[in-house]
Figure (cartoon, rainbow, N blue to C red):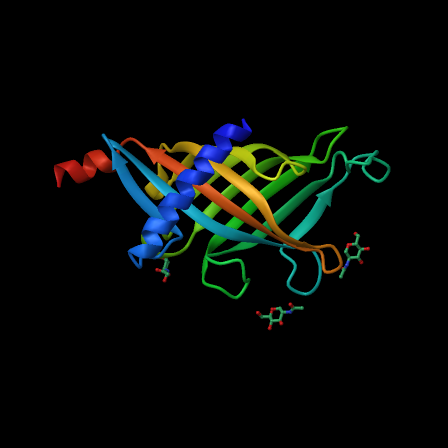
Length: 193
Ligand SMILES: *[C@@H]1O[C@H](CO)[C@@H](O)[C@H](O)[C@H]1NC(C)=O
Ligand SMILES: *[C@@H]1O[C@H](CO)[C@@H](O)[C@H](O)[C@H]1NC(C)=O
Ligand SMILES: *[C@@H]1O[C@H](CO)[C@@H](O)[C@H](O)[C@H]1NC(C)=O
């Protein structure tokens, strides 16, 4: 699986270099392959777990969460800012809203329920829906795009997430996301234009 991810990350690197060379915005790009439109998305999600601007809260725990080395059974709900760059003050392009459940008895891992609600440009109002098992010891974790709303209706795809930074004192983490979302109707529409 790591080889697969490495190959994909190399593809992303090429794509980013090409986009940067063309002087384009680099947080998204759509390309057509046959009648399939694949949109590449790249952004940062801010997990603020403490302080006046916190966006992530624990909503439930199990009878063993407090003594479990993996915080088993803890459920967090969040409404995290999504930005183009890793700095929280860079351009906001949406919110990552959902829940995570600590569901592995042996290693730190969460079951993800993520709605990437985009609020910028051509994707304003569109949502990418992502689910999957997120094991934090892996540097790059693969999650599934299970669907989408708006521009991403009937979407399929995958997301790669990694920890960009973590401040255990301030309880603030930045997560990097690269997502490939494929729909089979957007390029067909363009072909008929
Ligand atoms: C909370 O957000 C406000 C408004 O963006 C900002 O001025 C303030 O510095 C933030 N506080 C902390 C502790 O980050
Ligand atoms: C996104 O759409 C909302 C609702 O239509 C609108 O109020 C807002 O100005 C739009 N934002 C951008 C950045 O286009
Ligand atoms: C961060 O989380 C730890 C562990 O839950 C807690 O002890 C600490 O007070 C938190 N820090 C802040 C700034 O709230």
